[in-house]
Length: 331
Image (cartoon, rainbow, N blue to C red; front, side, top):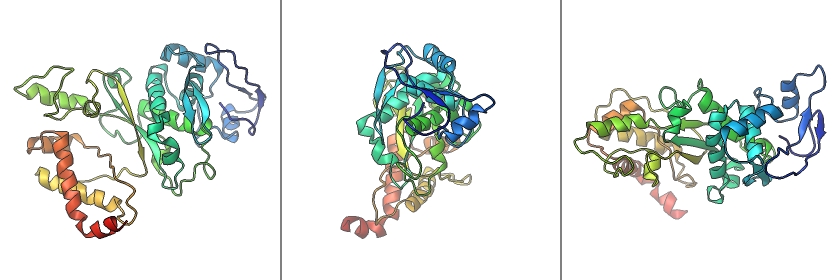
């Protein structure tokens, strides 16, 4: 999986043969050479060793992971706006360490990332270090053993790590995002390696079971805490991948003494306030990941919906930012 020119090894030219046959160029590893080192020196890794994407591994990823054909096109990937095919994504998934069962999530996330509305070029090429992260909802979380519980934002889980990493490799090896060139992040962040998380929907289902009012599985009203994809108009039974662009974080709130939802929201607002520079009001969205402990406190102390929580958090942030309003209005 490689752009034209540069790198080590012998390459066979591309031949376009239709959607059903793999058509990427091949790198021949010289006898006695380590394939991991060849890939690294070719600039095809993210700095860590990758799984060599042999034709057999790539073919297996496609055959077992999707009904799509290798040559089917998902879109154009900036900054080079190269064509992204199913095969190219499969190569990235193999290199990242994905299993075929993870591949549909990678494909869906790639399609969402390439949507013009996401503005991938604008978010990823910025000096602010913007990069896409993934939020997975639906039954597929459990079928692929996606970590939605302890340490969800950290290391240690193959599924989360490999899916997030595959997206980064698509950006780098297909889109041509090169650090110090077309990727001009000043400081960067660990999120640049890739980040994929799942929402612990089972916790919200427990709340529904305890409620005296039962709702149909596919028609949950927004009168209680519901999964993120439901707030976006999807059914609980649907598998959904949401792609967001983030520029920093995570910033963790350590608070195990607060006993009221009001105080907890105020503590969260204080952290959000420190992330916002009023003289450069470019960041107006925050992804807030709530731990089960804090969710239980919020839901048991009067905060019955996500919308209500958003409103409380918004109001607390506004109070803290009163002194900054002149800067914001002036600009």
